[in-house]
Image 1: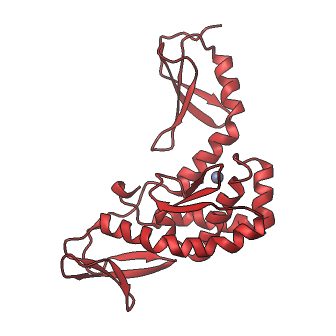
Image 2 (image 1 turned 120 degrees about the horizontal axis):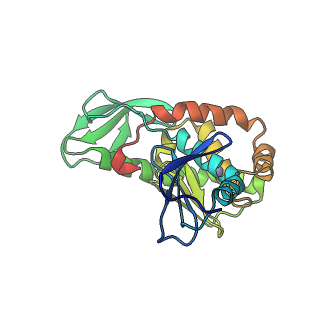
Image 3 (image 1 turned 90 degrees about the horizontal axis):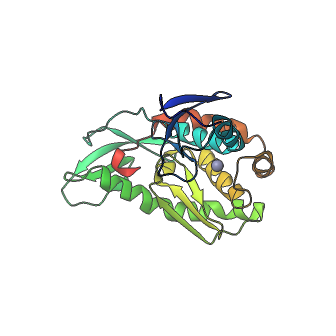
Amino acid sequence: MLVAVSGFPEVLRVGDLEIAVSVSDRRKSVRLTIERDASVTAVAPPQVSRSELIKMVEAKRSWLYGKLAERRELGEARPAREYVAGEGFPYLGRSYRLRIVEPGSEVRLIRGRMELGEDGGAQELVRWYCRVGKPWLKHRIRPWASRMGAEVTGLRVQPLGYRWGSCSRDGRVNIHWATMQLPPTLIDYVLVHELAHLQRRDHNPDFWRLVERAMPGYQDRRERLRRLGPDLWLPDEGR
Ligand SMILES: [Zn+2]
């Protein structure tokens, strides 16, 4: 049976997932996308039937749930910043107040304050998190990698949209710079999660067994991460 093109986009329900479906004759296969607001859309070629679409979504369910969970962890609502004296910025789980110093100064953490040049803003702060994050994370990931028998061939700290981390098959790990705002025990969870992905791409039971073996009781950290995510500082331009 063919999907009736009229009436699209329509909402397709598969379990507790709601997917906005639209049809495009320019597509040869179905494309599933998770939007910025964590809604799911599907663009399907006209010849795909509703039941085929449902089957496809079901096959991709664990992938979708994993992506949605990661996106919620780095959720949307967060206070806007003005980069003025006294504003707090988290680093390794503690908040540091901004001290505004002369223009052109490098961002630095000194005597319990975060120093920012008068002409600085989000960009300079993001760059600082990336700069301090790289050596810190490289050092931190080493014992976890050896415990899990994973070989890390490179580590980068950068904006990653809504994800805490990502990795590639050849052992490169990317960590979102905003991770450096978390307490170290939660950063460990992000690292273990990515190291487990070096062996298992999906969030299937085998994947979670790897995480559990390396970090017994990881569920608690995962839950704390989910709750903390929205409190972190994440400017639009630094995602
Ligand atoms: Zn994951």
